[in-house]
Image (cartoon, rainbow over all chains, first blue to last red; front, side, top):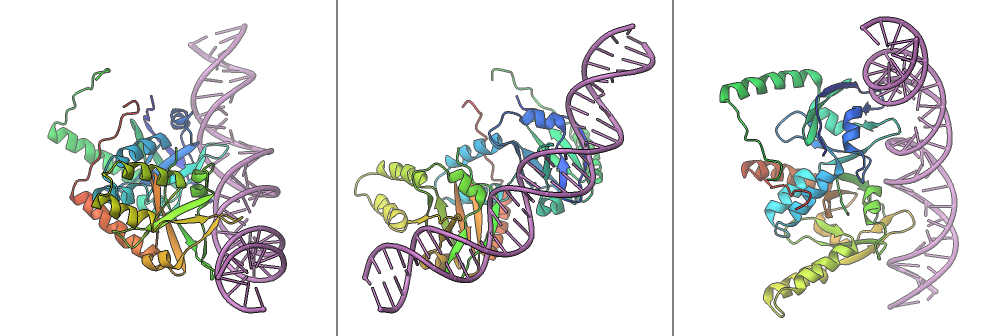
Length: 152
Length: 152
DNA sequence: TGAATAACCATTGACGCCCATAAAAACCCA
DNA sequence: TGGGTTTTTATGGGCGTCAATGGTTATTCA
Protein backbone atom coordinates (compact mmCIF):
# COMPACT_ATOMS: atom_id res chain seq x y z
CA UNK A 1 0.00 0.00 0.00
CA UNK A 2 1.10 3.51 -0.83
CA UNK A 3 1.91 5.54 2.26
CA UNK A 4 3.61 8.91 2.48
CA UNK A 5 5.08 9.66 5.88
CA UNK A 6 7.23 12.33 7.52
CA UNK A 7 8.46 15.68 6.23
CA UNK A 8 11.48 16.34 4.03
CA UNK A 9 13.04 19.68 3.14
CA UNK A 10 14.76 19.91 -0.25
CA UNK A 11 16.27 22.63 -2.38
CA UNK A 12 14.86 24.05 -5.58
CA UNK A 13 17.70 24.68 -8.02
CA UNK A 14 17.90 27.49 -10.53
CA UNK A 15 16.21 25.36 -13.17
CA UNK A 16 13.23 24.85 -10.90
CA UNK A 17 14.08 21.24 -10.11
CA UNK A 18 13.48 19.55 -6.73
CA UNK A 19 14.33 16.07 -5.57
CA UNK A 20 11.29 14.11 -4.49
CA UNK A 21 12.28 12.36 -1.23
CA UNK A 22 13.51 8.83 -1.84
CA UNK A 23 10.90 7.25 0.48
CA UNK A 24 8.12 8.97 -1.51
CA UNK A 25 9.62 7.72 -4.76
CA UNK A 26 9.70 4.23 -3.34
CA UNK A 27 6.01 4.52 -2.47
CA UNK A 28 5.27 5.49 -6.08
CA UNK A 29 7.39 2.79 -7.67
CA UNK A 30 5.65 0.51 -10.12
CA UNK A 31 2.94 2.91 -11.25
CA UNK A 32 2.22 3.40 -14.94
CA UNK A 33 3.48 6.97 -14.85
CA UNK A 34 6.99 7.48 -13.48
CA UNK A 35 6.45 10.73 -11.61
CA UNK A 36 3.89 12.57 -9.55
CA UNK A 37 0.64 14.41 -10.15
CA UNK A 38 0.36 17.83 -8.51
CA UNK A 39 -2.28 20.55 -8.26
CA UNK A 40 -3.02 23.64 -6.21
CA UNK A 41 -4.82 23.01 -2.97
CA UNK A 42 -8.25 24.70 -2.86
CA UNK A 43 -8.05 25.79 0.73
CA UNK A 44 -4.37 26.06 1.49
CA UNK A 45 -1.28 27.74 0.09
CA UNK A 46 0.15 24.34 -0.73
CA UNK A 47 0.53 21.88 -3.58
CA UNK A 48 -1.32 18.58 -3.41
CA UNK A 49 0.62 15.59 -4.67
CA UNK A 50 -0.06 11.96 -5.39
CA UNK A 51 0.63 9.19 -7.88
CA UNK A 52 -1.19 8.85 -11.17
CA UNK A 53 -3.28 5.98 -9.86
CA UNK A 54 -5.15 8.31 -7.59
CA UNK A 55 -6.11 10.41 -10.60
CA UNK A 56 -7.28 7.33 -12.46
CA UNK A 57 -9.54 6.45 -9.58
CA UNK A 58 -10.81 10.02 -9.49
CA UNK A 59 -11.54 9.87 -13.20
CA UNK A 60 -13.55 6.68 -12.72
CA UNK A 61 -15.54 8.27 -9.92
CA UNK A 62 -16.32 11.35 -11.95
CA UNK A 63 -17.28 9.21 -14.92
CA UNK A 64 -20.13 7.92 -12.82
CA UNK A 65 -21.67 11.38 -12.52
CA UNK A 66 -24.15 12.35 -15.19
CA UNK A 67 -22.59 13.30 -18.49
CA UNK A 68 -22.41 17.04 -19.14
CA UNK A 69 -23.88 17.89 -15.73
CA UNK A 70 -22.76 21.00 -13.91
CA UNK A 71 -21.40 19.10 -10.92
CA UNK A 72 -19.29 16.95 -13.14
CA UNK A 73 -18.09 19.94 -15.04
CA UNK A 74 -17.09 21.81 -11.90
CA UNK A 75 -15.10 18.94 -10.54
CA UNK A 76 -13.34 18.30 -13.80
CA UNK A 77 -12.41 21.97 -14.19
CA UNK A 78 -11.11 22.30 -10.69
CA UNK A 79 -9.22 19.05 -10.46
CA UNK A 80 -8.05 17.72 -13.80
CA UNK A 81 -7.55 21.04 -15.54
CA UNK A 82 -5.26 22.19 -12.79
CA UNK A 83 -3.34 18.96 -12.35
CA UNK A 84 0.21 18.71 -13.63
CA UNK A 85 2.00 15.50 -14.51
CA UNK A 86 5.54 15.95 -13.30
CA UNK A 87 7.86 13.17 -14.39
CA UNK A 88 11.03 12.16 -12.61
CA UNK A 89 14.37 12.74 -14.24
CA UNK A 90 17.10 10.13 -13.85
CA UNK A 91 17.83 11.41 -10.35
CA UNK A 92 14.26 11.40 -9.09
CA UNK A 93 13.66 15.11 -9.46
CA UNK A 94 10.65 16.99 -10.82
CA UNK A 95 10.36 20.45 -12.30
CA UNK A 96 8.07 22.64 -10.22
CA UNK A 97 5.81 24.63 -12.58
CA UNK A 98 5.90 28.37 -11.75
CA UNK A 99 2.12 28.46 -11.32
CA UNK A 100 2.25 25.87 -8.57
CA UNK A 101 5.36 27.29 -6.93
CA UNK A 102 3.74 30.73 -6.74
CA UNK A 103 0.57 29.37 -5.26
CA UNK A 104 2.57 27.81 -2.45
CA UNK A 105 5.00 30.72 -2.13
CA UNK A 106 7.95 28.44 -2.87
CA UNK A 107 11.20 29.91 -4.15
CA UNK A 108 14.39 28.34 -2.81
CA UNK A 109 13.30 25.44 -0.64
CA UNK A 110 10.31 23.11 -0.51
CA UNK A 111 8.91 20.87 2.21
CA UNK A 112 7.45 17.51 1.20
CA UNK A 113 4.83 16.61 3.77
CA UNK A 114 3.49 13.07 4.00
CA UNK A 115 -0.26 12.77 4.50
CA UNK A 116 -0.82 9.05 4.25
CA UNK A 117 -2.29 8.26 0.85
CA UNK A 118 -1.17 11.63 -0.53
CA UNK A 119 1.35 14.32 0.23
CA UNK A 120 1.68 18.09 0.06
CA UNK A 121 4.45 20.47 -0.92
CA UNK A 122 4.83 23.64 1.16
CA UNK A 123 7.02 26.62 1.65
CA UNK A 124 8.71 25.38 4.88
CA UNK A 125 7.90 28.36 7.12
CA UNK A 126 4.30 28.45 5.97
CA UNK A 127 3.98 24.79 6.80
CA UNK A 128 5.39 25.19 10.30
CA UNK A 129 2.82 27.87 11.02
CA UNK A 130 0.02 25.81 9.54
CA UNK A 131 1.04 22.74 11.51
CA UNK A 132 0.97 24.62 14.79
CA UNK A 133 -2.49 25.96 14.06
CA UNK A 134 -3.72 22.52 13.05
CA UNK A 135 -2.41 21.01 16.27
CA UNK A 136 -4.06 23.70 18.35
CA UNK A 137 -7.37 23.20 16.56
CA UNK A 138 -7.21 19.43 16.92
CA UNK A 139 -6.58 19.76 20.64
CA UNK A 140 -9.33 22.34 21.09
CA UNK A 141 -11.90 20.31 19.20
CA UNK A 142 -10.80 17.05 20.71
CA UNK A 143 -10.55 15.57 17.26
CA UNK A 144 -10.95 11.83 17.22
CA UNK A 145 -11.09 9.21 14.57
CA UNK A 146 -12.59 5.78 14.46
CA UNK A 147 -10.10 3.33 13.04
CA UNK A 148 -11.17 1.48 9.98
CA UNK A 149 -11.03 -2.29 10.39
CA UNK A 150 -8.75 -4.02 7.88
CA UNK A 151 -11.56 -5.89 6.12
CA UNK A 152 -14.12 -3.15 6.26
CA UNK B 1 -5.92 4.06 -19.32
CA UNK B 2 -6.57 7.32 -21.13
CA UNK B 3 -6.14 10.34 -18.91
CA UNK B 4 -6.04 13.97 -19.95
CA UNK B 5 -4.50 16.22 -17.32
CA UNK B 6 -3.48 19.84 -17.00
CA UNK B 7 -4.00 22.84 -19.26
CA UNK B 8 -1.87 23.76 -22.25
CA UNK B 9 -1.97 27.03 -24.16
CA UNK B 10 -1.04 26.83 -27.85
CA UNK B 11 -1.12 29.17 -30.78
CA UNK B 12 -3.46 28.98 -33.73
CA UNK B 13 -1.61 29.91 -36.91
CA UNK B 14 -3.08 31.78 -39.85
CA UNK B 15 -4.06 28.50 -41.49
CA UNK B 16 -6.12 27.52 -38.46
CA UNK B 17 -3.67 24.89 -37.26
CA UNK B 18 -3.02 24.15 -33.57
CA UNK B 19 -0.64 21.70 -31.95
CA UNK B 20 -2.39 19.20 -29.76
CA UNK B 21 -0.26 18.99 -26.59
CA UNK B 22 2.23 16.12 -26.76
CA UNK B 23 0.92 14.51 -23.53
CA UNK B 24 -2.58 14.43 -25.02
CA UNK B 25 -1.26 12.86 -28.18
CA UNK B 26 0.52 10.27 -26.09
CA UNK B 27 -2.76 9.47 -24.32
CA UNK B 28 -4.42 8.95 -27.70
CA UNK B 29 -1.66 6.84 -29.19
CA UNK B 30 -2.67 3.45 -30.46
CA UNK B 31 -6.27 4.30 -31.27
CA UNK B 32 -7.74 3.35 -34.62
CA UNK B 33 -8.09 6.97 -35.71
CA UNK B 34 -4.92 9.08 -35.59
CA UNK B 35 -6.47 12.33 -34.42
CA UNK B 36 -9.20 13.67 -32.19
CA UNK B 37 -12.97 13.96 -32.26
CA UNK B 38 -14.42 17.38 -31.48
CA UNK B 39 -17.89 18.88 -31.14
CA UNK B 40 -19.45 22.02 -29.70
CA UNK B 41 -20.33 21.85 -26.04
CA UNK B 42 -24.02 22.56 -25.74
CA UNK B 43 -23.74 24.13 -22.30
CA UNK B 44 -20.48 26.03 -22.58
CA UNK B 45 -18.58 28.19 -25.04
CA UNK B 46 -16.05 25.43 -25.50
CA UNK B 47 -15.15 22.52 -27.74
CA UNK B 48 -15.44 19.01 -26.37
CA UNK B 49 -12.62 16.71 -27.44
CA UNK B 50 -11.70 13.08 -27.04
CA UNK B 51 -10.36 10.08 -28.87
CA UNK B 52 -12.51 8.10 -31.24
CA UNK B 53 -12.92 5.30 -28.72
CA UNK B 54 -14.82 7.58 -26.36
CA UNK B 55 -17.32 8.29 -29.11
CA UNK B 56 -17.79 4.58 -29.55
CA UNK B 57 -18.60 4.26 -25.88
CA UNK B 58 -20.94 7.23 -26.08
CA UNK B 59 -22.68 5.58 -28.99
CA UNK B 60 -23.21 2.47 -26.92
CA UNK B 61 -24.68 4.52 -24.07
CA UNK B 62 -27.05 6.34 -26.37
CA UNK B 63 -28.02 3.06 -27.96
CA UNK B 64 -29.42 2.06 -24.62
CA UNK B 65 -31.94 4.90 -24.68
CA UNK B 66 -35.33 4.11 -26.07
CA UNK B 67 -35.44 4.00 -29.85
CA UNK B 68 -36.98 7.10 -31.43
CA UNK B 69 -37.21 8.84 -28.06
CA UNK B 70 -36.78 12.57 -27.98
CA UNK B 71 -33.78 12.40 -25.67
CA UNK B 72 -32.03 9.99 -27.93
CA UNK B 73 -32.70 12.11 -30.94
CA UNK B 74 -31.48 15.24 -29.22
CA UNK B 75 -28.23 13.66 -28.14
CA UNK B 76 -27.59 12.14 -31.51
CA UNK B 77 -28.19 15.47 -33.23
CA UNK B 78 -26.17 17.60 -30.87
CA UNK B 79 -23.24 15.26 -30.56
CA UNK B 80 -22.79 12.94 -33.48
CA UNK B 81 -24.11 15.23 -36.15
CA UNK B 82 -21.87 17.98 -34.88
CA UNK B 83 -18.76 15.86 -34.30
CA UNK B 84 -15.69 16.50 -36.41
CA UNK B 85 -12.88 14.03 -36.93
CA UNK B 86 -9.72 16.09 -36.92
CA UNK B 87 -6.65 14.16 -37.95
CA UNK B 88 -3.09 14.97 -36.93
CA UNK B 89 -0.62 16.24 -39.47
CA UNK B 90 3.00 15.06 -39.32
CA UNK B 91 3.70 17.46 -36.45
CA UNK B 92 0.70 16.52 -34.32
CA UNK B 93 -1.46 19.48 -35.27
CA UNK B 94 -5.14 19.64 -36.16
CA UNK B 95 -7.05 22.19 -38.18
CA UNK B 96 -9.72 23.89 -36.09
CA UNK B 97 -12.92 24.13 -38.14
CA UNK B 98 -14.25 27.73 -38.17
CA UNK B 99 -17.62 26.59 -36.83
CA UNK B 100 -16.02 25.18 -33.71
CA UNK B 101 -13.54 28.01 -33.28
CA UNK B 102 -16.34 30.59 -33.45
CA UNK B 103 -18.44 28.75 -30.94
CA UNK B 104 -15.57 28.89 -28.46
CA UNK B 105 -14.51 32.39 -29.42
CA UNK B 106 -11.05 31.19 -30.39
CA UNK B 107 -8.94 33.28 -32.72
CA UNK B 108 -5.21 33.45 -31.94
CA UNK B 109 -4.68 31.11 -29.02
CA UNK B 110 -6.38 28.02 -27.66
CA UNK B 111 -6.32 26.33 -24.28
CA UNK B 112 -6.40 22.54 -24.17
CA UNK B 113 -7.98 21.60 -20.87
CA UNK B 114 -7.66 18.07 -19.48
CA UNK B 115 -10.81 16.62 -17.94
CA UNK B 116 -9.84 13.06 -17.15
CA UNK B 117 -11.29 10.81 -19.82
CA UNK B 118 -11.89 13.76 -22.16
CA UNK B 119 -10.66 17.29 -22.74
CA UNK B 120 -11.99 20.67 -23.85
CA UNK B 121 -10.63 23.47 -26.00
CA UNK B 122 -11.27 27.03 -24.82
CA UNK B 123 -10.43 30.60 -25.50
CA UNK B 124 -7.90 31.02 -22.63
CA UNK B 125 -9.47 34.03 -20.91
CA UNK B 126 -12.93 32.52 -21.08
CA UNK B 127 -11.62 29.38 -19.47
CA UNK B 128 -9.91 31.24 -16.64
CA UNK B 129 -13.21 32.91 -15.82
CA UNK B 130 -15.11 29.66 -16.05
CA UNK B 131 -12.59 27.87 -13.86
CA UNK B 132 -12.83 30.49 -11.15
CA UNK B 133 -16.60 30.23 -11.15
CA UNK B 134 -16.45 26.46 -11.08
CA UNK B 135 -14.05 26.56 -8.15
CA UNK B 136 -16.32 28.92 -6.24
CA UNK B 137 -19.36 26.74 -6.94
CA UNK B 138 -17.55 23.57 -5.99
CA UNK B 139 -16.52 25.08 -2.69
CA UNK B 140 -19.95 26.58 -2.03
CA UNK B 141 -21.83 23.39 -2.76
CA UNK B 142 -19.29 21.45 -0.80
CA UNK B 143 -18.88 19.36 -3.89
CA UNK B 144 -17.45 16.12 -2.79
CA UNK B 145 -16.87 12.85 -4.37
CA UNK B 146 -16.48 9.54 -2.79
CA UNK B 147 -13.32 8.04 -4.15
CA UNK B 148 -13.64 4.61 -5.59
CA UNK B 149 -11.58 2.04 -3.83
CA UNK B 150 -9.05 0.37 -6.11
CA UNK B 151 -10.76 -3.03 -5.99
CA UNK B 152 -14.30 -1.78 -6.01
C1' DT C 1 -7.39 25.46 -63.30
C1' DG C 2 -7.92 27.56 -59.03
C1' DA C 3 -8.67 26.94 -54.20
C1' DA C 4 -8.35 24.33 -50.35
C1' DT C 5 -6.02 20.77 -48.06
C1' DA C 6 -2.30 17.72 -47.10
C1' DA C 7 2.56 16.67 -46.95
C1' DC C 8 7.13 18.29 -46.25
C1' DC C 9 10.95 21.05 -44.33
C1' DA C 10 13.26 24.45 -41.26
C1' DT C 11 14.03 27.06 -36.82
C1' DT C 12 14.39 27.79 -31.88
C1' DG C 13 13.83 27.16 -27.31
C1' DA C 14 12.49 24.20 -23.59
C1' DC C 15 13.00 19.95 -21.52
C1' DG C 16 14.81 15.23 -20.93
C1' DC C 17 18.95 12.71 -20.33
C1' DC C 18 23.56 12.15 -19.00
C1' DC C 19 27.60 12.79 -16.07
C1' DA C 20 30.05 14.62 -11.86
C1' DT C 21 30.44 15.58 -6.92
C1' DA C 22 29.56 15.80 -2.06
C1' DA C 23 27.09 14.49 1.87
C1' DA C 24 24.55 11.28 4.33
C1' DA C 25 22.95 6.91 5.35
C1' DA C 26 23.40 2.02 5.43
C1' DC C 27 26.31 -1.71 5.86
C1' DC C 28 29.95 -4.75 7.39
C1' DC C 29 33.36 -6.72 9.97
C1' DA C 30 36.69 -6.88 13.36
C1' DT D 1 30.15 -1.32 19.36
C1' DG D 2 32.98 1.46 16.85
C1' DG D 3 35.42 2.48 12.80
C1' DG D 4 35.89 2.06 8.14
C1' DT D 5 33.78 1.08 3.66
C1' DT D 6 30.23 1.02 0.33
C1' DT D 7 25.91 2.57 -1.44
C1' DT D 8 22.35 5.76 -1.93
C1' DT D 9 20.70 10.70 -2.08
C1' DA D 10 20.69 15.17 -2.98
C1' DT D 11 22.46 18.66 -5.83
C1' DG D 12 24.78 21.07 -9.82
C1' DG D 13 25.74 21.63 -14.70
C1' DG D 14 26.18 20.53 -19.94
C1' DC D 15 24.33 18.86 -24.08
C1' DG D 16 21.25 16.55 -27.36
C1' DT D 17 16.51 15.79 -28.63
C1' DC D 18 11.92 16.79 -29.32
C1' DA D 19 7.92 19.81 -29.18
C1' DA D 20 5.87 23.93 -30.88
C1' DT D 21 5.67 27.03 -34.50
C1' DG D 22 6.08 29.02 -39.16
C1' DG D 23 6.61 28.58 -43.92
C1' DT D 24 6.87 26.25 -48.66
C1' DT D 25 5.77 22.90 -51.95
C1' DA D 26 2.83 19.02 -53.62
C1' DT D 27 -1.83 17.10 -54.28
C1' DT D 28 -6.51 16.58 -54.45
C1' DC D 29 -11.09 17.92 -55.60
C1' DA D 30 -14.55 20.95 -57.32
